[in-house]
Amino acid sequence: MRIAELFKRNEPVFSFEFFPPKTEEGVEKLYDTIGLLAELEPAFVSITYGAGGTTRRLTMELATRIKEQTGLEVMAHLTCVNQSRDELEATIGHMVDHGIENVLALRGDPPKGSTEFVAVEGGFSNANHLIEFIREKFDVCIGAACYPEGHVENPSKEDDLNRLKSKVDAGAEFLVSQLFFESSLYSEFAARARAVGISVPIMPGLMPVTNVHQVQKFSATIGAAIPERLLQRLERYKSDDQAITALGIEWSLEQARDLLKNGAPGVHFYTLNRSLSTRVVCRALQTGL
Image (cartoon, rainbow, N blue to C red; front, side, top):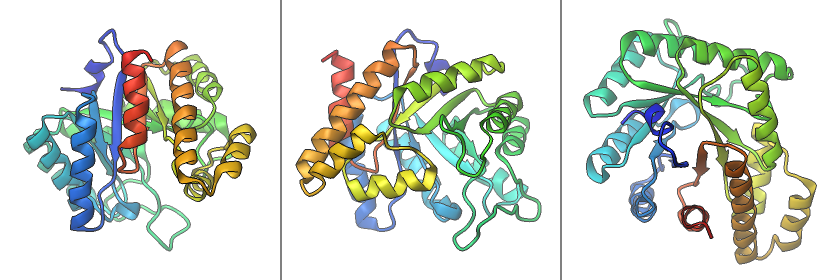
């Protein structure tokens, strides 16, 4: 089912994001995680590309295997990194042939060792050109990424919003946000997006904290600010894994409730291939606890 259609239902859309593991053992553990999260009946799950497009083949394999074996709706990530038009067409064609109807179109990060993104010969340098290409070649539902705090490479939030509008004008039917830790950031961003004519659903992305060092490093990389009141609590409990997990659940649940109360169409969970925190938060939202 096309994800854009899911937003027309009169209920919140919940989805889970996974990344392709580097080992066979990791793949099997991922399937265990997916099995547990499938019990929550998510609207869809998404499979990322590795940095620099390094897991292109595994992303396709996981996406098609999950779709065929679990029946879950799958959104496969697709980036411009190290792929020509012909290679992109072959990649998307393979996914479509295996029942994948939904694609998240991204520029992608520069390959390891590079500081700037450079398109390969015959490739694309930004997401809106990729979206135009997909729309021209395939009948699939296309999503795009958005950044409530602005893209880390773009100091101008106004320019960043204009670039987002270009993605929607090119054919993106819904947006999934980068993670953030203050609900007000989403509300302010959504209002600014609507003001420039972006009318497609904007799905907020949340990640329950499970590790202090990990979330600090990740947040610094993507430019997501950790609120001082959260940071203080993380520092207080950083040597207690169980306390950090409980805090991450509490914070994400409070965020999600506030977002849904104020009109967000659902929540996209960055699971880091783990199930416990996401299961607890999502189940509480589904049951109204």
